[in-house]
Length: 452
Image 1 (cartoon, helix red, strand yellow):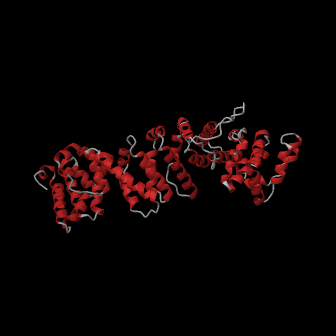
Image 2 (image 1 turned 30 degrees about the horizontal axis):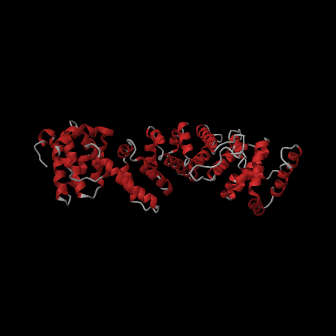
């Protein structure tokens, strides 16, 4: 059968010839007794055995994985361990019992990661990640399980394990061993392990950051949403680590994160992206890029939605404040652009400043006259008389200052929209609509005599 499609249940239905292994001295008599007592018993009975004698069973399982190479048996023992840890993840602490201090519990799993058998790879990865995460922390915050103090034999240290795991995880992201499960398995494991400083530095050194970026894209199915969430969780964990931030800055990560937060309805995805953006806001040029990519408008729209998560709401508020600070530092045209894109038009000094219009008129040509198009859209969509009046005035300024102003504005069908505002109930709106129409009909030569 294809190893990639094996299930734990199928593997556990096998009968393993433990007696033969004892005869050939691959396992001891004690080991055989423990296995006979445990194998094929009810879950409650096995649970009691683990409560009474857990470390002894860990030693048996790890010993078999170290000494026996027959794939069916290796798969079986990995399935047994997986079953134990799935039923109760806290049992991973058994691997760190003081009675096992001289045993190299990590080595077999680390070696098995590189077997050309997906079932063995996936189970080894999952088990290793759980065991590593369950290790006891020492008084100084570092982790136990290195070289045994009274042993001359060097055993696999925690740093060896973490580096080996990261190497395998990056290999999966580059070229998955399983077409549909390789990448989700690697991302799920990374989302747990990137809390570890050694993992962060190894991941960055192996150029892992760029392997995450293509996975940051809007998702629709349940499986793809979970993968997106865990990918964004990885990016969030990396956003606390300066060398990773440098990699994120030179990749397409930011526009992709903004695209995800704009289109996602899943609260946990929105939360993790908002918290990541909040972390990146003050780093390098991220703040200016966020403003440029329209994040202030997106944050406003997100704030209008009914979220229940307090971290998300707080993150949105912090992001909004930080973006406002960034807008304050922008050039006059960038500030103007933000005002227009947010739809918050008011009589700030630049609207009536002839120097602003002279110096910036060619900037209006950016992105196929994007800002002009937004001004024209405001005429259709805004119910705020002040915004309508300012939009009419600014369009009239564009007509007067730009060499092709009348032609561009006429082509964009602005004339009809301004005409509709000529009989608006607000005198401020009608006055500026009239000015705009006069400039459109008279042209720049005569319109320059008209004053607002």
